[in-house]
Amino acid sequence: MNSENTVHEVAIIGAGPGGISAAVECKKYDVKDVIVFEKTDSILSTIHKFYKAHKHVDKDYKNQVVQLRGHIPFSDGFKESTLELFESQVASNHIDVRFNTEIDKVEKEGDLFVIRSASNEVFKAKFVVVSIGKMGQPNKPTYALPPTVRKFINFNANDCQKGEKVLVVGGGNSAVEYAVDLTNLTDTTLNYRKSEFTRINDTNASALKGVLDSKKLKGKFGIDITSLEAAPSISGNADRDSIKVNFTDGSSEVYDRIVYAIGGVAPLDFLHKCGIKVDSNGVPLADSNHETPTKNLFVVGDILFKNGGSIAIAMNDGLDIVECIRKRIS
Image 1 (spheres, one colour):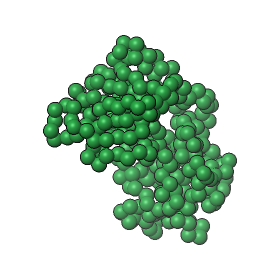
Image 2 (spheres, helix red, strand yellow; image 1 turned 45 degrees about the horizontal axis):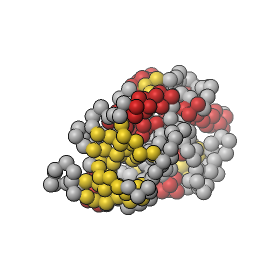
Image 3 (cartoon, helix red, strand yellow; image 1 turned 90 degrees about the horizontal axis):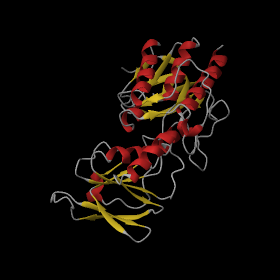
Image 4 (cartoon, helix red, strand yellow; image 1 turned 120 degrees about the vertical axis):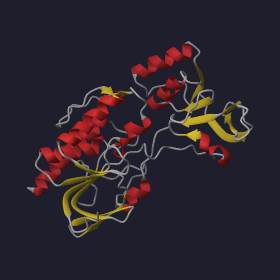
């Protein structure tokens, strides 16, 4: 339904932790008219899509100790318990989430924001909170990806098959978790351009050591990839090519599939369409209230950080934004 004549108090774009937290805090602070737009069919879609079953979810990500100040009782848990917590908050607080609604553009017209969806619906709001993450825009390598094998170059491990020879590329928690999990399915190698894993949590460090010590996982550490080439299939399947990977140490090896887990980037095109300027690192310009130079337009989530934030930080930031909005409404 087109809501062009309805003016919402607060519109939130993105149903990640920061967006849902902001919506819940709005309800708790008696800002009742809040609407959330989510382009997928679920809240916390990054966790739904990119986290494997039973993946541990840390409150204090990368040892960033955060004292939560809002109403959502988030703590260390797993994929399933985290999703259940946030879904229960949406239900109990009667949050209006418009799923499968991709927002294409936000424009300020007078004191209101005009919000246009990709399907040409028009919404209006007095305040807008942009809460979109980076994982939906995964980093891609700088070298070319051969067209004939792009189907077998992935950014999560969902399509990996038993019997494939798989190369996982990356040095963070997701890369390690993909690699460790895949050792139970198929022949797996983990490649990281550095020699040491300094960004992973203790649980993943222990799991990585275990599969390396047991020879279940092969490691190519301290070397990077220079290029990829299509190569004759190593699985005997005449209907597909394999992927020849060339490394900086001069070596080459052929794999059936590559899984990249090398982080994400801010969706700059969308930010530009919202009139949000970014710095040289692609981080949106915002003040201590997380407000952009456009009054009443706020940003929350990992796009506020060059190297990613945390769920807990996003939740507190969402609270800060709502407190600012509440004061202005009052």
